[in-house]
Image 1 (tube, rainbow, N blue to C red):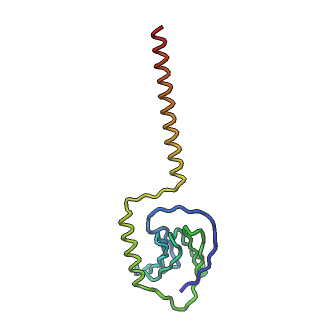
Image 2 (cartoon, rainbow, N blue to C red; image 1 turned 30 degrees about the vertical axis):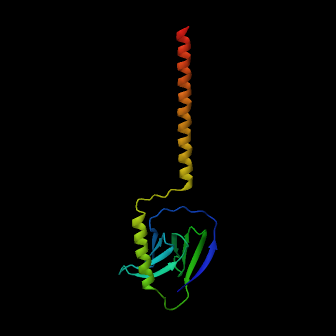
Image 3 (spheres, rainbow, N blue to C red; image 1 turned 90 degrees about the vertical axis):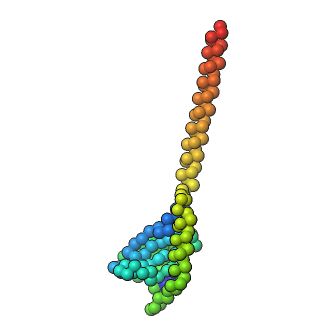
Length: 158
């Protein structure tokens, strides 16, 4: 079991549906990964078996960083906080059934959203501003061409 300390940090984060957000090694034996389901998965490097599952965020775990030499792990997601994890029990508890159910649910979600692209709001605003500028340019061009045509008719009839 791990003990969690939460540090709040109001920094907005954008995400896209990729399931695995970041992966890192923890020592020589483990690989850790964040996920869109809000969990940290800890895998045995040699057997590829899932050995621990941590609920680290209500939504998405984007970042995972182990301490260089202490048994501490920092995680963050889109909950606007950073969580620090440290072992607090001699024997870790792990629910294999819950982990299996979660991985199946993640696989279904990934399949259902494979054609979905999520983009940051700032990108959409810039894109809409560009489209608006293009539209204004076209309208200005049409008005100028209309004036030229009207001017040519007036000039041609004189």
